[in-house]
Amino acid sequence: MTEKETEAILSNLKDLGFTEYEGKVYMTLINDHPLSAYNISKNSGVPHSRVYDITRRLIKKCYFTSKGTNPELFSPISPEELISRLRRNNSKLTGELQHQLESLNFTADFDPVWNLSGQTEAVEMAALLIEESESIIFIGLWDEELMILEDCLRKARNRGVKINILLYGEAKPDFGEVYTHSIEKLDDIHEVGRSLDLVIDGKVCITGSLGGVMPCQAVWTRNKGLIKSIEGYIIHDFYIAEVSHSLGEKVEEFFGRNFENLRKKYGH
Image 1 (cartoon, rainbow, N blue to C red):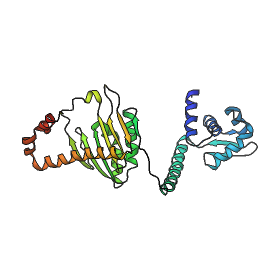
Image 2 (tube, rainbow, N blue to C red):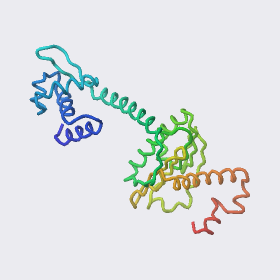
Image 3 (cartoon, rainbow, N blue to C red):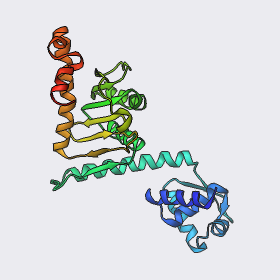
Image 4 (tube, rainbow, N blue to C red):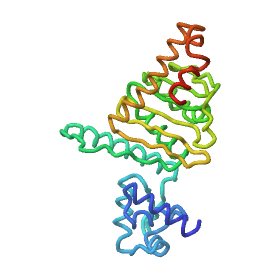
């Protein structure tokens, strides 16, 4: 492992609550174990006087084990088990903190709109928000993004979340309320990229284009005005689907195929 890779891991460990010395001791034992306190200090650069204190803390957190005496030898839990424990511990802490903070009377004086750097970040953020959903999801997306998000959408449905999908493409998901949107007249798709619109529980949304010739122009926010606009946009397409289904050929007779007459009238 290169020095740069080690530094990146240590940085992530610090973000997850490890001190600098704890991270160095853990990484030392990952590379070579079991080790005595003397050898841990020698290999990690952590002062010998600090090693026992650090190993005791990490044993208490169930990140280390030890055996023997004179010398006592220390071993780390596996990286897989460490990740599992960190997830459980952070989930418990964030759950407790959420409960505590919800008791406070807080009203935001601003709701920032955050830029998403690219398609990958936008889809990852969408997956995270879907995993946190509780009651209802409105989402407009293309086949390509559905392939990535289908599993977490299905899991949300299985939790009892109502799923409403505005789909651009030919996929046929077997869950949720699905309306397949025509992709005719979407001539700028290669320039701006596929779109992604998502509203979770009326509390947070993602909207924008994922990038093509032009860079990604997607954002996420808890701004209530923008949330209502995006939710309304998706719902209105569902209205059109219901009307088209009920009136059949009369809709095309009055407004043209794929509402072409209306699109021309309003410059689309």
